[in-house]
Image (cartoon, rainbow, N blue to C red; front, side, top):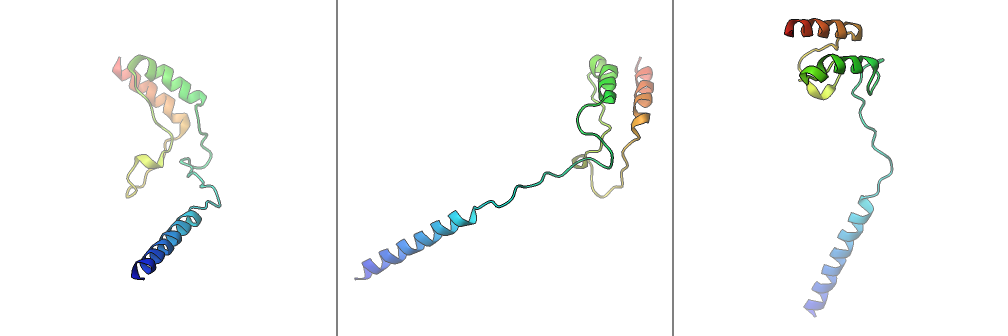
Length: 99
């Protein structure tokens, strides 16, 4: 008699665990990806990205990263992204110093 009771409790416990796992995995909404850009920045490649690649990427194999990427800095510091109009003249000066 005891083995029948133990088997039924085991089956009941297994049924409860399976039903909890099935109903707990229900997804009701999609996750939103966090945007790594500030303000008016444009994602993707721009004309400035192409000019920087032509200037530094082809010759020296250097990637110039000037866009804001929140995952690449320590949160304890206050950082400000550069003004996009100043990036190309600064990299031109760097290239002249390398020649």
